[in-house]
Length: 159
Image (tube, rainbow, N blue to C red; front, side, top):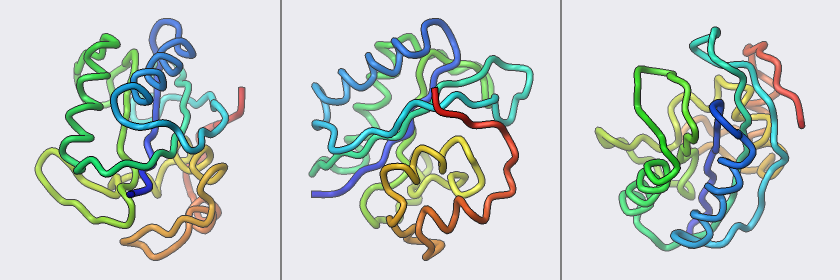
């Protein structure tokens, strides 16, 4: 079984409901949750005039190949009304694969570990809550070390 870490984010509509619905779909279509972080409210990253996000990190275990996992995630986003309108655009739900075990995947539609996660407080705060000791397979540092080295000053707070 592979330990998978997913980041959920929503900044449109009933944000908490979209997170809850995403978790229900993930548990029904992919695998049961092993751990879930607290929900964090985060200033929009990359497009600072967008509404604030709710973010949460999930850990699950699966034998699904990474590409199958990605297709299931994209289907869940679609069911929950995700529209892809520009880079860093607002969305009802966003589900990112942060880690797929210790695998390194570099394909046109899938990069794992997520290439920006070590630069983003909105990712590392919830990730550190449930996976502080997990070692990034490229950077060879654990999540707590990465969080402590962050230069990102966006406000991220538990809600």
